[in-house]
Image 1 (cartoon, rainbow, N blue to C red):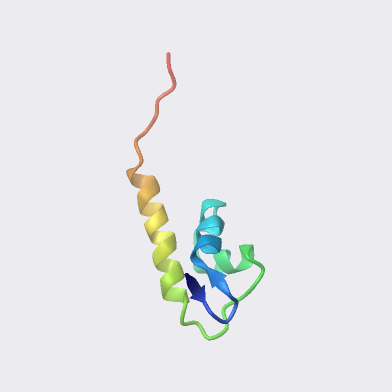
Image 2: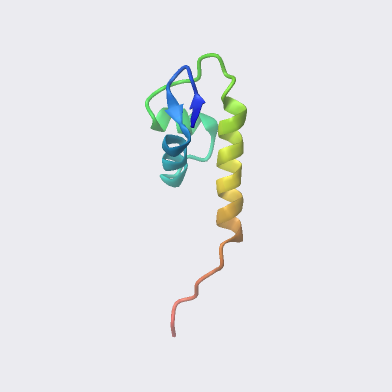
Length: 66
């Protein structure tokens, strides 16, 4: 699904940028080689970044075998 119409960015591209380390909407745009234009998608991108961060925080911790 398209999240940013101005830059033709879809949810898969945004998740890929977040998985690659983007922690802010600005980092998502930079990682995808674009910049916000109208700004309507910024809230959605921030939400996706926050959801990803929350999922990472909830992931079980794996300890190295002794």
